[in-house]
Length: 93
Image (cartoon, rainbow, N blue to C red; front, top):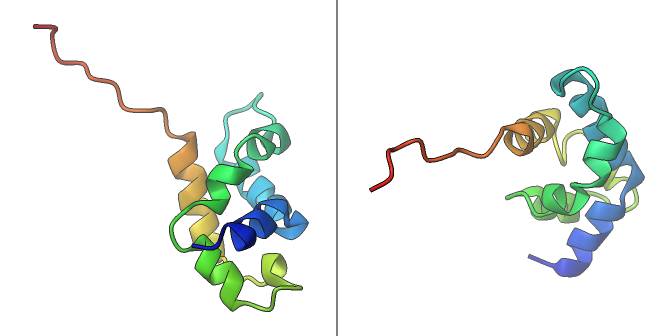
């Protein structure tokens, strides 16, 4: 993974807008998708396969290239980050 490419990915406005559009369909009413995405951009940029996809696409238009980081990749990442962390419900020993 290239941290330089990861940083460019996290800063890409088209990627941010696409993630926000997806988040607006997944988040609960009352959650601000823009703020939610903004606070997680680095987590999105570290998702498996994202840096490679972004790097392999034309760097000038990578974020807008739906064949690079696909809508499916975005949806899976949004759902993964939106899911509450699993808690251990087993009785204490």
